[in-house]
Amino acid sequence: MEAFNVAYEKRLAAEREAPVQPRKPLERFKVWLATPRPSPVMVWTPVQLGTFLDYAAPDRLYALYHLIAFRGLRRGEACGARWIDGELDEGLLATTKQLTNVGREVKEGSPKTESSDAVVALDKVTVAVLRAHKARQNEERLAWGSAWTDTGRIFTRGDGSELTPDWVSEHFERLAFAAGLPPIRLHDLRHGAATLSLAAGNDMKTTSAMLRHSSVSITADLYTTVLPEVAREAAEASAVLVPRAVAVGEASQTGGLPTVSHLGGRRPADLVGSRKPQVDPEVGE
Image (cartoon, rainbow, N blue to C red):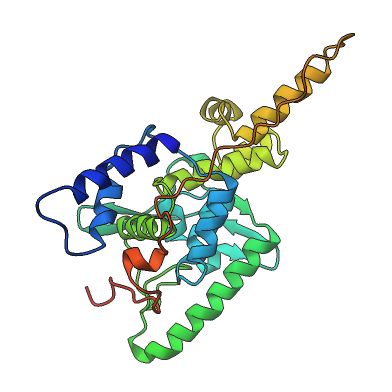
């Protein structure tokens, strides 16, 4: 993350020195997107994830990003989720459908793998978030009246029609940029959910079940590198197992990855405009 921040600042400085200056602050977003990431797979630290969720809380799709971040759904599974697939009183959500982009069209299909067609357990906070989202959706339904499109999806456009998965990713990127965070893919929120699960003390089998992998070995292969907090705790636990007659030094106090922000002293609103009520750009397209 720190490497990305350095690269981004260099590109931004080069832009400021260019003969022709960009007229819109939004050009910084384009530089942010174009800056190469140090790794194809990156996850935010818990502090960074909290920053994103706090910023995105007023957004009408907040519940979708929350669901992916904490329960590890894939993008297409979240977009394809239906209210009939959920039992909020029981804290359960079945992932039976997914939406994918096929050219300019959106297609409904089965989950990615056979093991992906399963039931995901929902924590109390996520259930509360989904209930709040449902209340907002009901308000939108009343506002649209007969023009409302009843797809039965949990997450939709403002008029009830289906989301475009690619647009959901683009919207995520804009929120992350506005929150002053380094870029990650929307799919990386799923990776982050796995590392959070491990950091919370869940074993690999429990985490694998949450992700609906076909085997624990797949999960273990993907997440051999976890959050710094987990690695540090494991290292310190190992040190305790070795009896020593002489105490040399002290346990490491190194914290996790630093919080990286390209905002400096600027407010997010200075970069992407003032915080106004969300308007769904896809409605009417």
